[in-house]
Image 1 (tube, rainbow, N blue to C red):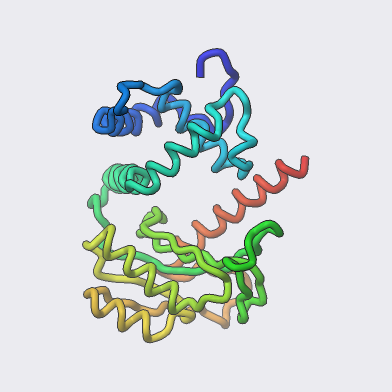
Image 2: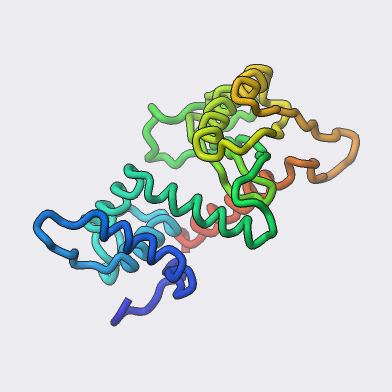
Length: 245
């Protein structure tokens, strides 16, 4: 970051103190065949990835004072494919849970889906229309713990059923957090999800919304995943408004 003004998306010193040693250890385990150490510092690579993620710009449109697409996307794809990003995510989640006085690994999750309108340039082959909500685009499935920390994410066309997404979410939950034995869902998840959960020793319980109380009422057990959805929506609106300005 020497010689440039910081961006709001830059990694702070405190954040780098947590993830930096992990990435430095990763680099030590993956030396270049030619012995080349790389032109860009890993912290700047991370800053570049976070800039693209926060603003939604195309890789080729990264600012000139950040590492270019060639270097940024190289590490992004490498860390995505070899599981480094998942390992860092799981490490940070465990630390956050411990700080909150909970065990490192959760025993319960909340599942939910949300249909989102896709941008015009998104390929039609990966989008669809949510028949129930009449929303064209994609559907995002979330599995979060009791603190709202994300355990698993599934992104599909909006036409895919909640049942299908719920089964995929449970598979990811079992893969990454086998300690989970309970899952709370809404009425959109049908018996297939409960049966699939039972196969993996996860008790799937439907928590219904109260229809007699007017206005917004947080649903017991499920409110935490709805809060994560609202925060994601606010982030998307902020990014959209910045592009319009």
